[in-house]
Image (cartoon, rainbow, N blue to C red; front, top):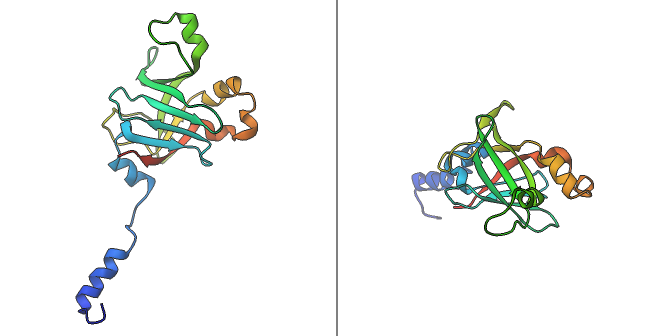
Length: 166
């Protein structure tokens, strides 16, 4: 670029600058909820939507086998709920069998910039920047008693958007 014009040099300089505003929020606006990936601050807990229309996901805890998760309309109050399952039998299962393989069941919310809760959007809606899985820390600690020593409890229920699986 030794003999390049000043205009070309200026254009090259602008193109090499970091894109302003590349934040969790701008990633969320470009990523549909169904492809979002979330993690705790230390990455010891992850939730990865798998791209299916029913918004199923994998839930990963460091040192453990992955769990299966599903999203559905809440039954007793408005909003979205989720369930995390561990080695459920295939096919028709009884209520007892389902209870035995359920790790967690509860509401899933987004957290807005002011710390308030927002409803989790549809599969094609922009991903929320932070995901709150109400009651997850207590449920996981019951299933994995040493979890409290490995992962700060406040990081288990509030996961940050870290990736888009496009």
